[in-house]
Length: 337
Image (cartoon, rainbow, N blue to C red; front, side):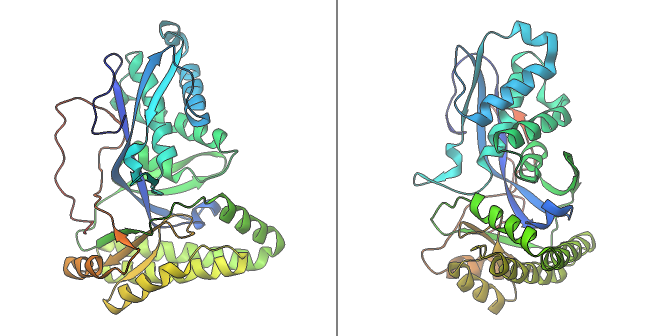
């Protein structure tokens, strides 16, 4: 049930976007800021009577949504949510763009819409519930930044606040910044890297705190550049952040920045930009940032194989109820291929 295909006739169809980290990986786990962009790879969900849960994430999403809507759930026949994340695949391989978070948000939204509670009027509740469901299904791991991006769309700043849902702030799209998203062609499981970083934090707390502090400060500099519309400052901060991620990986003995990312990092630097992993790392998704669209497009054309630039765009809609006359929004100007 990909986003481009018709779904079953019946209850409403809800869709939610994937995400990209521009900056803030790992720092966001320690109350630092992260900046993420919602992208137009979407999960699609629909509540169906008689259906068994198709995954732990969907099971939790339906459970918490039913509990939240209270008496209204009595009108909902037994069943679950049919969800698809096929839009998050290239040639049958999963791309690390936050598919499980998008599924969680879309699934909660599908339950709400099935009982006549519009997604558009309940976005905050849907985010809070999807955050709880996604966190429970993943054993308490994660910052919730990807869930927030799927719920609200656009460009967002995310900051954790204890065990509750993180604070989310919508950001203006920087007209001076130009990005290329690239993929290694190999899906990566990030759980092992996060566990390795957590082990490092327990083993050498002072060294860990110093690295995380540097990551936090660099993310703050990126945010300051964004607010000033200073692309040069954003690119410089992203470059430094990538180098700090490499240091964190070395210290934690985790392949956050793999060898395959060193070639695009060098290429981006030669063109006056910066390239870094997007997300937990390990060799999946990368993002390169530039101050001009020309250098961004040159980078995309010059990427060495097996790396490939992805044709994606910013998605400003977040979670919403889909209709069959939806018009595709215009290009944002942030991403280039």
